Image (tube, rainbow, N blue to C red; front, side):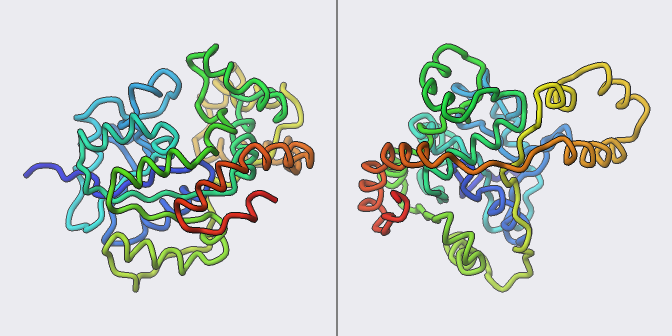
Amino acid sequence: MSTKLPNFLIVGAAKSGTSSLHNYLNQHPDIFLPSFDSKGKKVKEPRFLIKQIVEQRLHNGVWNYEEYKSLFSAVDNEIAIGEATVLYLYYYNNAIKNIIHYLNKDVKIIIMLRNPTERAYSAYQHVSKGIREQKSFEEALSIEENRMQDDKTITPMIMYKGMGMYYKMVKAYLDTFKNVHIILYDDFRDNTKIEMMKVYKFLGVENDVNVNLNVKHNKGGRRWRNSFLKHLFIEDNFVKIFFKSILPKKIRRHIYRILSNFSKNNTKKINKETQMHLNNYFKDDIFELSKLINKDLEHWTR
């Protein structure tokens, strides 16, 4: 029997609630989302359908078709089969071409959108938790385009402004696919159960299921107090290698949680001037998007 492939995709946007949506859907008995590859490695975002663009920039991903198909080899009687890769929205041209080639035009598309200024700062907080972002938010914004051109290995997640220019991305999906469901982050956050019911209906599955909607996933984190501690915890070094050789993984994680909590500052709010600058930057795009999806998004510009 041939392996079934996705009939729905969560395509983004990054830092817009997609991790929570993924985890809620994964609890539904009639929905299949891959969690592990054939080697037992955790796979949340396969990224296969944009492999040509991101393979050099991202360490984790599924880069060949046979491996991609194997992600769905455990599908049984599930009705909705999907995967979630948030960069499919940003790299829409490449993603759409490969969706049609490897899947088909009947695939259902789920897009989650968040106030682009809030999304940009949340993405910055996320990236700066690790060693990939050493710059201030304001400096990162000012050199965004050049960073991607100058460093072919840097994560696309540093496109804080670029990933929030939704209009062309969303329009491309609406123009190509007949089944597109759009979720606004504010609605999903404030009325999770109602929004999940809409998703169940869109996917054609039962809505009378027991799903834990209380846990929020992949929330923006706090920043390290200094670069030494940050590199000590995150990069490979003799201290990490030593403890890895003598302590079980469960104990290492427990120690990490305690020490990292002690070593991090609470997240700062976005600078008001920067917020106003970004609101103005996104204003025209928000206006066009609002007309496209027939939603009042004026609050995103304030």
